Every structure is written in C-alpha cells, then in structure tokens.
Length: 599
Image (cartoon, rainbow, N blue to C red; front, side, top):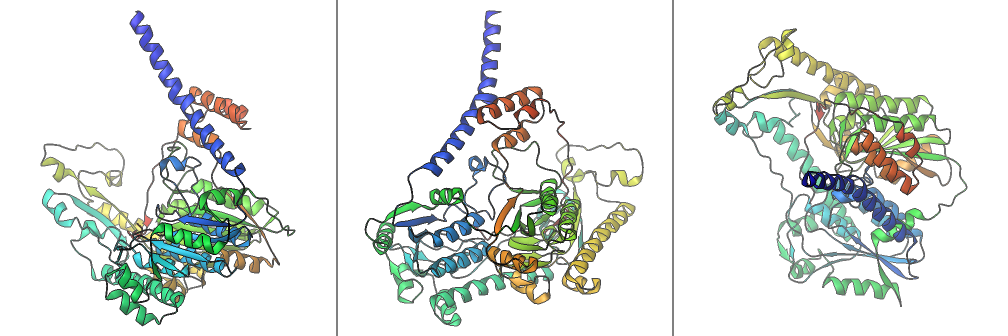
C-alpha cells in the first residue's frame, strides 16, 4: 500500500511538473528573454547589423508564439521591415550578411533583394560573405541576393558551384505495380501534376513542359537580376557561371565575386567602414528593439496586413502542438481577420500576404468570402504573393482589387485533383485482409481502401471534380475580368511564375510587400505615410496553450494558473469555458505541387 501511494504521488508530481511547471517555466523564460532583449543595451552609436541567412526563412512570422521551440526562426517579412527601420536609423552604419551554402526560395530572394537595394539607396553599405555555393535547389537565387548586397566575399578555398538548377521527382508507379497498390485519382487538367508520381513512371509531356518552363523563368530572372547588380552583361555572367564550377579565386578572377577572405576579415572590414568604435549587432536583437520602438506619424489612415502562409485547411488550429513550427492557413482564423478588417473603421485598405500552395477547396472558399466582405465594405484588397500563391492560394487571391507577385512566385495551378489508394491487393500479399460493411447508397463505400472505384463511383467522383474545377474557373473569371473559356485556356492546372502570370493577366504587377502597400494607398486614396496594422497574427502564449491542452477541466485550470502568472485577461473567462475538441476531415483537393528549391 505504501509503495502504491508513493507511485501515485510520483505520477501526480510528474503530471504537475509536465502540465503546469514546465509550461510556466518555458513561457516565463520566453517572455523574460524577449523583455530582456527589448530592454537590453541600447544600439551602439555605430552599429553593423549581422544578418545570418543560413538557418532558412519562413515567409511570415509564425502564427504560433512558441514556434521557436519547433524550429521557427526569421521570416522574410520581419527581415524587410527591420531593414526598413535600419535604413532610417542613424546609428546603423551597414549590414553584414552571412549567406546560405545552398538554394533559397526564389520569391524570398526576390523580396530580400528589393529590401537590400532600398537599404543601400540610403547610402549605407552592405557586404555578403559566402562559405561556398553548392548545387542545392535554387542556388542561383542565393547568388542573386549576394549580388544585390553590392560587395561579395567568399571564404578561401571554398567552392562556387552555382552553375544551374535541378529538381528531382520520385515516381512510384513501378513500385505500386509490383506490390499491388492502385492509385485511383482524377485530375483537372493535364498540368495538375501533383499526383503524377503515383500514376506514371516518368514525366508526362505536359508535366515536363510546365516544369522546365517555370524553372527556366526562375533561373533566367535570377541571373539577369544578378547581372544588373554586378553591372555585367547578362549573357556574359550566364556564360561565366555555366562554365563552372569554380574555386573562390577563380570566381573572383571572372568578376563573379569581389574578394576572397575569412568571415572575420569581412566583418572587420565592415566595422572599419562604419567608423571608430563600431560594433557588430545581431540582426534579431536589433529587430526586437526596432519592433518595440514607438512608431511616429500623424496620418490616422491604416492599412491592415493579413497573412496566410502554408497549406489551407478548415478550422482554427485548436488542439495543435503549441511548440510546432509548421505553418497552416486556418480558414476560420484568416476569414475572421478579414471580417475584422472590414468592420474596423480605421482600416482603409487591406494588404493580404499570401504564401500558400493551396489546400482545401471549402477552406479556400471561406477565405475568399472574407476578401469579398472587405471589398463590399468599400475597402480595396491588394494581394502580395510570397513564395507560392498557387491552386487554393490563387483561389483566395483571385478576386482582390490588385495582385502583386514576385517574378519568381509560383502561382496559378488553377485546377483540382482527388482520389485514393486501393490497398486491398497489396495488403493481401502479406496476409492482411480488408473487409467492409456499409449502409446507404453505393457511393458511401467509394473511398474505402480495399478496392478501386467501380464505374458508377468513378463517374460520380469525376462529376464532383468537374464541379470544383468549374467553380474555380468561375471565380477566377469574375475576379480577373476574363471569360471562363479564356481562364480554361490558362488553367489546366499549370503552374506559372509571377513573371509569366503577369503576361497572362493572372497578376497585375511585379513587386514585393511594400509595392503592395503603395498600391493599397493609391487605391484607397491615402496620401503620405500610413500605419500598418497586422491583424490575425500570433496569439498570446496563453491562447497557444489553450489550443494545445483542449478543454478538460484540469487543462483549463492549468491554463488559468499560467494566465494568472502572466496577467492574461482571459484567465477568468477560461475558468468557465469548456469546449469539445472537434474532429475535422482535412481534404486537400486544390493543392499545387511543391518544389525543393530551398536549402
């Protein structure tokens, strides 16, 4: 009995430690760290910001306040906003950049390039240092960003292997045939190739055509931009790059970089340019201070900024891992932000930042309804496209007043697919049998995993795919002022770059986030500076824990205790609020194929 009581006490203490104390310590440490960083030593009189891009970038700040524990880091949006603040800060004398060794998301590199050029236009220097450029993803986009810094150094004996771009796709058809797996999918139309690896053992002509087209557009855009920033003829730079790979010294002799030197030599060089007493300041530390600084300006007009990054799904993310760095566009959360902007009298326009390869058609439609509500309130909506705004990502963008994309944004993919895997034969070879029971109509068993569709089920499912496809076409036709026939010509599930989409009328302008802000001001007839109001961003730590722990009374009490420690005003309400965790079917019928163009 004594041992039993000791065991129960141990379990109780362990649960208390895990459920209450550890979250409180983690939250306290996180908040304390942020407060310490914001209130820490002031920026020195002569500062050189050190921007390290080697750990990768998201497009937008994580929606989850604890994403740092799941690998969340810098975002493109935070970097460009911080660079804008640094350009106006007399204490910041320059920026020292650490480049990744592999590729970057091309549209992210485009956005950063524009921010680099804006910063340099203030008369302040930048320097990019590389410890090697290797053929991983869109490494030419990394080189383009280096060229935009104005001065490029490489470490001695490092390799310059930015000679082109390659994407590999793995096809499973022969494996499936060998083991009896049947891929049962419908595609609308021939360029909707996300499921091709399950249906074929090689590229179809349409798949290869589309892939080479957008890859060529990204590659050419990067090197033409780099040539302009290096003040070289594009063909001369392309010839020099494609003749590689080169050592650092060989790259310097061909005008691809400026100097060869160690990281310490490069940073010391930048400090010397900044003046006596100059110090290196971590970019993230400066970003916290810049974000906390009071914003000046007498203009009362506000442009709301609403973000959407990741796969589009229905719901609001309740019950998710509070420490996950994964991004999801939750339809409830984004549509609520859009409706809030429509109702906010201080908001005169909305910039909708979209970086999504798509997802659920119903979730996309819910978000599009929010876009329409903002416009119905007399407020223009300008979409700023990030790395992706394809398939469902284009669905939610299609009826904005104006769409602005980077030249290398992957967009379009106006199409739909859906289906299942029939595993009965495959599992039967290993002695596993699937048996089913059903009531109702024949279609009730259409998505069972035992066998493929029968003819009636296939016809019904194909009709549903046709309906979603035609609905997508109709929304694009209305939003882009095209005929449905014209949209069908462009659609067929094909992915385009922003540059290609601009020529086809699917995008209005090429540019970045601040170009979208300027367009929103123009459409709303706002003069002078404008306040940016971010709606629907990261919640409080309390809200993240509330979603994670669900609605048990013990969880709510734990959350209330944490809220009491941090002074969260929701604590009292949480004690009375017990909600059920909802089960959700997360279909993804309008998803574009994604690529491996980042690090």
